[in-house]
Amino acid sequence: MPTILTGDRPTGRLHLGHYVGSLRNRVALQNDYETFILLADVQALTDNFDRPETLRENIFQVALDYLAVGLDPTKCAFVIQSQIPEIAELTVLYMNLVTVARVEKNPTVKTEIAQKGFGESLPLGFFCYPVSQAADITAFDADLVPVGADQAPMIELTRDIVERFNRLYGETLVLPKPMYAEFGRLPGTDGGAKMGKSLGNAISLSDDEKTVSGKVMSMFTDPNRITGKEPGNVEGNPVFTYHDAFNPDKARVAELKQLYAAGGENEKGKPRLGDVTVKRELAAALNEMLAPIRARRAEFEARPDEVWDVLRDGTARGKARAEAVMARVRDSMKIGYFG
Ligand code: TRP
Image (cartoon, rainbow, N blue to C red; front, side, top):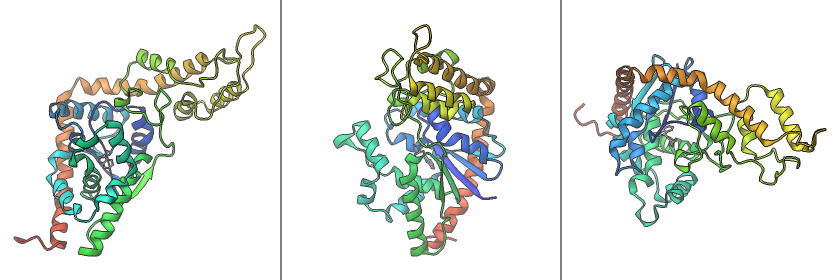
């Protein structure tokens, strides 16, 4: 079976953006690929190095999210990054194959640096995380990397490193291909380009029904629609983007869009379709989708020892794979002095 490697920074609970960007794909692919999923705690440290004590709980929460969405630990290895020193070794070796100028041009890193307001105190560790991500991907001989579109520059860099490495030291590393979610990037509830916990515009997979409904009801829509009778904007309206992503009743979504775009009033002089109706139906669709995810989460949450066993076992499987790759790398680079 070919191999999948993908991962998440454990900085908190996962949200709907993770779900459409990657989790949904992973669940669909786990039967056809040997899957390694990295809980990238070392990468999380690159902008949380002053709070290492948060990692343990965040790893646990992300593992719960994985199990809750239906990732099967007999098919997927959940691997804790910090327990795989080979990743750090590969990172150092790859650093020689990447220029500073190349990382400086990485649009995802650029945006993050601006958002986090690092300024003059940008840590070298954060700046270099794309190189470490190339180590993540290659340490497991990944053929395929299912990720959101924002990760495209990381995969391109990884592919360049692999090609350069193989040219310099001989055919050693597997060249990975990205797989982007069909849906693209999910906007935040505020209409911002990207959903993010730290941006305060996220709906978590573990939010309860009331929280989800509350967040949906206060979502950004078309600001020009004041009475609800004006023709509304469907394009770029996050409420409709979410309907497209999560409401299985496509016919109803088409009808809602058509009524919303037309505007107008009914025989009682009320808007033919108000924003409240569109949002209520979205909240209902989301809550229906999330109900079984919440239920599975609660089951595992009650058995934390089992969750840690899953992590221990997955990490051991990942370690075995990374050791084999590292042995090949040392051999190719002629630094396997003692055999
Ligand atoms: N950078 C990814 C994110 O922010 C997380 C990640 C770390 C990752 N290592 C990875 C994704 C390896 C894919 C492959 O979401």
